Image (cartoon, rainbow, N blue to C red; front, side):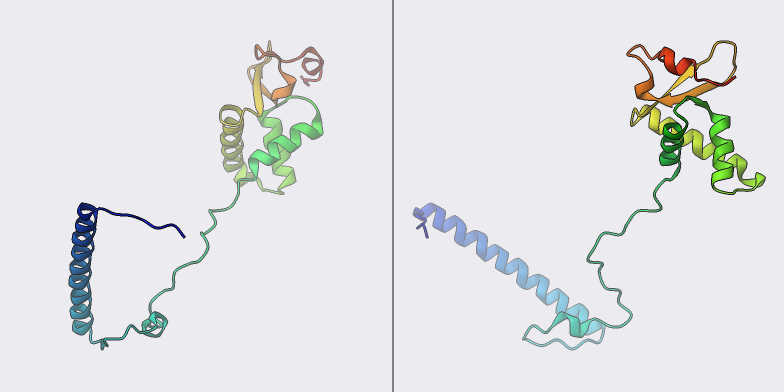
Length: 165
């Protein structure tokens, strides 16, 4: 163990600091006792076990962080479907596949469409896992994995051939 050497000025400053902390703590303790007395709780000079004073109504603190909501399934679905098909697909193809895969009725089509478009946007802009490509002569864009595109963002010729009309 090392020995700390302090000069008189440092000792004086430390003494003042700890005396102020002691006074501040005593004032807090007096305030706590007064508030507990108002609430009808007996206080003793000895510290008691805090678990004894916790009532059944008081919720306990969680020891682990609460998990966030459900994990998004659409991003994984899009990536899995592109890998399975090995070709770029349109959003409508993805939506149709999702309707079949999740056995959803037609009333949920709009919600599924929006979910797929939002997930594709995140996959494209945030994660960089997919890209889109405008097909000449078609109004819709096709979605493909990023590795299917060159550095300029053009679809590689082998995948361009696989686009279904």
